[in-house]
Image (cartoon, rainbow, N blue to C red; front, side):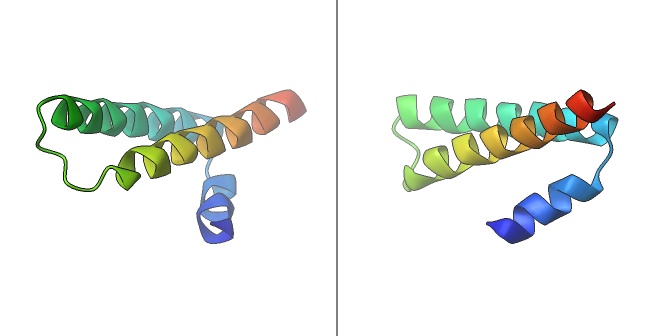
Length: 66
């Protein structure tokens, strides 16, 4: 978990925005798989949600210091 946060902190604001966008697309795809009962491991939804929150938090911190 801290490894992922450390990697995100190294990125700049534009890269973080792209990361959030790609995570949201992945989360949408997982939700669609769940709706069509194709998703085997539903824990990935929770993990993706937390990754999005982690990236958004670091993005907000970087924008506040600018």
